[in-house]
Length: 112
Length: 116
Image (cartoon, rainbow over all chains, first blue to last red; front, side, top):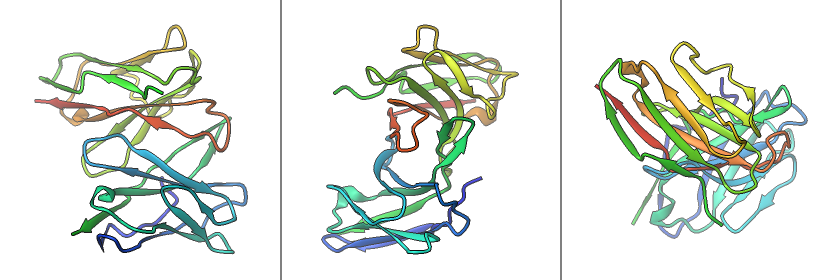
């Protein structure tokens, strides 16, 4: 089962920051937090991942709380093309492979 | 760099028929994954290959689903016989080295299967 909790849907105005929350209160010390998104009729796309420190790349920023029980994905200037389902995933060790367990994610709608 | 290729993109069959999906991963990627995504849910891992060996097939319904990756490159997922509940999008993904904690998975566009 997924180890994360996300709101089912969120709205954001175009050009504004989109802040997507995720709770992962049972995360272990060596488990990473990953974010993927899935635009309609496409496969999931990797966005960013982190362990303890905040991370930033060309797509987004990831803020992880000090106790690591929650995180926030930030899209600094959302565009209409950012409308998608966003998945927060805690990467689960599985017999030598680190599988991704997807929940239902957050449906982000960016409005003009 | 070319992405993960899948075919066909769409398939409609009747229940009890068989169907096969094909995936060609990103060149050089050792690990290949097949996921099933039912409408309104997140993808669920069916099987993971490391080169041509199976790493995890714990959620593959082995009475009707089979998958192979004979030469450690492309892969085929088969369903025989199909049931109505198999209607879903079947996603293929690949990664450089599935055993690494920070290994990123890259997904193909998926095959949408409808079973009537």
